[in-house]
Length: 333
Image (cartoon, rainbow, N blue to C red; front, side, top):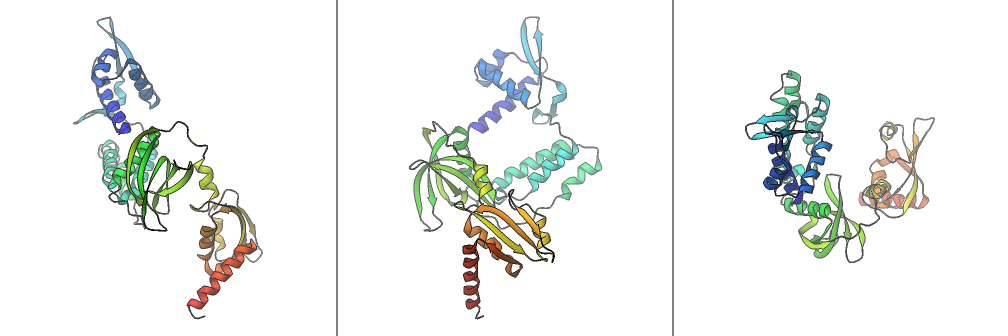
């Protein structure tokens, strides 16, 4: 994978540049098998990441480049970048790695645990601060209802590679409605997590339509030699921001009255940036917002039971009323 290859080159360059006396451009070209221009791009990347380089001359003639010693840490496995994080940043990073995600329930769990161990090696085990050494025990990770990604590691990395290199993939995807798999050519665009699952926006080649795909439903994925000449005019944040959950479509202007009991729960969250809350004298409130995804909105309202009442739109109120009547008949009410 190109990203992995770039990381290997970066770490090898870091090792070479951290040697006493530094190294010349020509030597780096030979060791890394890169062009002179690529070596300078690598220098720019290091500078952007906060690892400044210094110049010196060997024998007064050959220019050598090296990393400043305070940015290099020695380990049994070699020299590695010294990370410059304060205690708060370290704790935040460790907490993010400790958070349960869909990838935790796949083969990626080993990779995540390895990253945590590396962070511990840099900051916890070698720290003189008792608080810093023990903080890893402060973060708990609760089990969730994760979608099964075990065995999908190669598919996930192939999708990532396609998105990074802007190359079309050919894959077999199992339909949720029919339960059968079909072949398609597509370009992976963006990835996001939602409700314990991992999803991917793709551009389908046959009709140039953007679709949302669940990663676990891919049966197989392989890269093709077909590059993407131009990306679609598509803003994933806009689409996700308008949808209540994953379902897009016609947006609804809804108004829901929540009881005094449910009101505190509603007030402590931002359900949509466009929301408006009207407080009532009896302690209840009316939540007004605009969102797409009628089915998802209806399921959310129904989850509050008798603590929620749809005021607008009327057709959604009628639909929920019919749902409740059918539910009552199911329970002989």
